Every structure is written in structure tokens, then in C-alpha cells.
Image (cartoon, rainbow, N blue to C red; front, side):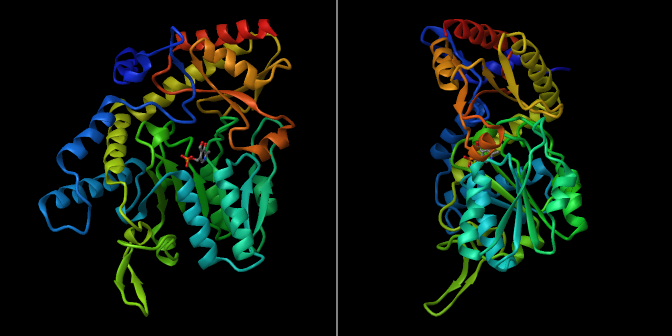
Length: 405
Ligand SMILES: Cc1ncc(COP(=O)(O)O)c(C=O)c1O
């Protein structure tokens, strides 16, 4: 059975909107996805029925809210098949998850001169935290170059590995090129040198089934809002053996075992990394989003989105002057493109006038833009609620806009 996209679309109230009198064509899903009614209702339900601060309370509501937050942790654990819910740390998003690893890992596992390997195609969220650690901890950053079709190669990573390499931090799917990196092979390569890998799964966890145990993944970071959940919540998965060795990233309530003015001992995992009141409403709504994805089936989602991506690439290529950025065969749900010499921003504005939402610019990947020798791109990114009719509207819109220049 295939996805019933017509029925799915009815779960997303925002998709029925008109923009400038035209039906909304939302193709900015890599920036954030829309939310199904069950997620929206979950937020209302938590505030209307069980709202109370969690963990610290003995009273009824606090127990229910705590249970909801911890159940959400188990739902996320199941989704990525983590061995233990202690390995699931709630953060505010992929950005915070990566900042947590960069701070705590470098502080505890790195000496000045040690090296972190990243790639040319990383989002700023997986570049800048390492640069800050370069200043604080004295680590150095090694960058894997890009091949012509937008792929990275294992041999290029291996070339950079030295006795000083402490971590490989790599995106699973590029938010610009849509390239799916061979993370299983990268993790395996790292482990042959006893080097752990951090996978930035912000653009993959909603499209590709991920089993952290099968991958033997050390760290995995992602955001709720890119996977049909609410904003403000994210996840860091970390192998217990690593998280145990790493110091807290933020300090305050909840992450402590005992505090005196002389000395503080820290709470056990995962609470050691969750200082302050966590977003227990967000975690409940994220769990609802996970259940929604599971109900549709990630395999079916993947196959539907792959067909849509292929359809979009074929149709876009028929436009004169079309240049698709990133021609790897291994792609997921993202197409970046340029048309003739038209500035992406100008094209994006014209498309907006037609009700078509795409993203324009450097997509928080300026070093990648530099490597490609361009300033920015237009980016259409797809979700399972998008249709071939919407791709047709995009193609028609781009064709029309191109004629205006
Ligand atoms: C590959 C990648 N990593 C990290 C992020 C950061 O995600 P967030 O802003 O939700 O923390 C993004 C956001 O676009 C992304 O595409």
C-alpha cells in the first residue's frame, strides 16, 4: 500500500491556505516542516490537562507531566533504536545538540593540537561550534573536500585521519545538495582508527530510517521541527560510554545530584545534560510526531519522496538554463538550483508571488557556497505531503519567472 497523500494533506491544516490568492505550495521543508493536527492538539492537550513542572514534584500533575516527558524519551529511543533511554538527551534542537558535543567532548577528550574532521558540506551548526572550541580547547579542524558531483569520499576522509584525530563530525544529508553521505561506512572507518563519529541527522531522520545500534553510531543530532514536531526541542543521541565520560554542558537545576557551596555532584544520565526546566510540552508533541511518522511508515515515506524528487529533477531539467547543484545519485528530498544568471533572491520573490515557498540564499552553508563558487541557490525541499501537481506548479512558476528576466 502506498501513502494516501490526499488523506495525509487533510492532517495538515496550513496546507489548505491561499497565499496571494493562489494555493500554497510549500517546498521549504528542509527549513521546517508543517505540523499535523495530532501534534498541534497534543500541545493543547498537555497544557489543558497535565501541565506542571516535571521531576521535582510529588503531586499528581507533576507525576503525569514527568511520565509524559519520560515516555517521549522512550518513543525517541524506539524511533532510532537506541539501546537505552539514558542515551537520549533532549536539547533545544540540532544546533544545541552539536554545541553540547563540541563543548563537552573537547573539554574532556581533547588536548591542544588534537583534530576534529568535518566536511565541506556542513551546515554552520556543525562548523562554528568547532571553531569556538578551536579558540577554547586548542583543537584543530580538518575539512574533507568535495568531489565534483557534490559527494565526499571515504578515501578523502582517511587521508585526513592522523594520530591526533579525536572525532569525525559529518552531516548525513546535505541541506543544500541533498546528498546522502555513506555514514555507515564513515562510522566504520572511524572505528578502525578508534575515532567516534557525530552524525548531524537534521536532514535525514525524517526521511531515512536510522538504527543507531546497527550503524554503531557514537553521536546523532536532530531537531523536532524538521520532523513534523514543534520548534524548540531536539535530540542528542550519545552512546552511554561517551556521555558518561563527558562533563555537563549547561549548569543549573535538575542536572545535579547534590549541591553545597563547596562542591556539586552531578545527576545521572541523561539528566546530567538537561539543566533547567526541559520543554516537556515539546517532548510530548515530538513523540506524537514520531508516532505519526511511524504510522505512515518511514520506508513508504522514503520511497514516495524519492519518486517525487526524481520527478522534480526530471521536470526542472527541461527548463532552459537550469543548473541543478549537486548531481550525486544518492540524494534525499532536496534540490538546489540556479537558472541562467538570475539571482536566486529575485526568482524566490517571484515564486512567492505565485504562492510557492522555496528558500533562497546560502542555506547556512557559506563555506560550501565558496567551494562551489556561487553566492547562493534556490532550494526546493520536499515532504511526504507534497505532490506531483505541486512540482508542476514549481516548474511552471520557475519557467514563467525566468521569462520575466
Ligand atoms: C544539516 C543541518 N544541520 C543542522 C541544522 C540546524 O538545525 P536547527 O536550526 O533546528 O538547530 C540544520 C538546519 O537547517 C541543518 O539543515
